[in-house]
Amino acid sequence: MKMVAKGKIVAYAVWHTDGQRELNFVEPGEFQPDGTTSAMKAAWLLNENASKLNLSLKRVHIREKRYIFLAPLLTAREHRGKKFGKALLEDGCEYARKRHLKCYFMSLPGAKDFYLKHGFEILGSREEVIGGEDRLESVDRPRPLVNTLMRMKSLG
Image (cartoon, rainbow, N blue to C red):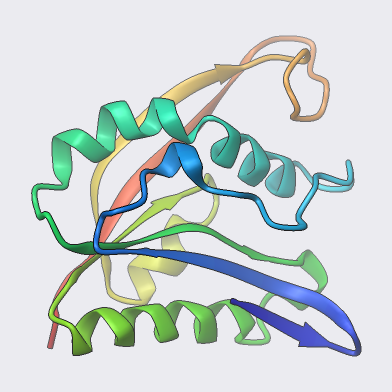
């Protein structure tokens, strides 16, 4: 699902339903990192490394056979705070509520507060060390990238 403003994609979300599609098969759509923000590159890297995340946090914390999983949800920096991401998140959560499915999401660094504010809880985190040779901006020394698995609190 995508949100478009003035002919440009400003927010993008992919919901995977019923646990039938594993994260390592997630297609990034038309999104490619453009080198402008580390958050966009981190999202691309998360999608690229989804099979590793699938083998760790997802297997440990997700017990249901049927669920909905969001990977990824991206909003262009200049369009944050305009409720585009919130609309995409609420759409997927409503889908989950209507079908009595648990709703999960892997949060990137800096986005946890957004999801906590919108009814998600933290289940666990995985830290990966990212260096200059990876797709994130070059750095003098390795730095951590913490991905946090979150779940919608209630099906209310």
